Image 1 (cartoon, rainbow, N blue to C red):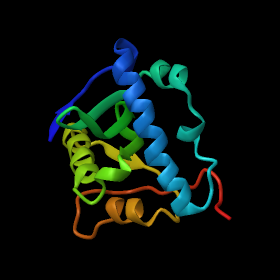
Image 2 (image 1 turned 30 degrees about the horizontal axis):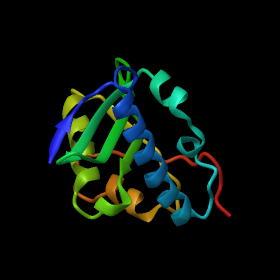
Image 3 (image 1 turned 45 degrees about the horizontal axis):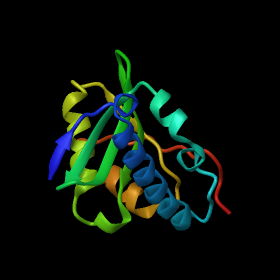
Length: 143
């Protein structure tokens, strides 16, 4: 696995690959929670490249298999997106990406949100005996 921190606004090829990953990963989440009104599914290439936060991506050879996006301020690191290709789940990619952001947080609180019915994400963010502290909030109730 190769990890990198590219800028989608600077590389149109990467922006297309990232948007494809985002759509497939969040389509799987929509299926899990039974609701397709998830903001990343509504985002287009312009919105994706206009966002000026931080990215770490995971590559398996030339295949983009995961990405995490976050914004930060002096006191908080706010994880905006965690995405793994549906073909690459259960390989520890999301955990590794999350760990890399936590390592860069310099002791600041790390906040992440997911749908309450997204069991894999809730499990990842709330692992027992983990230094992670998760804050959960729902954008829109499922069902």
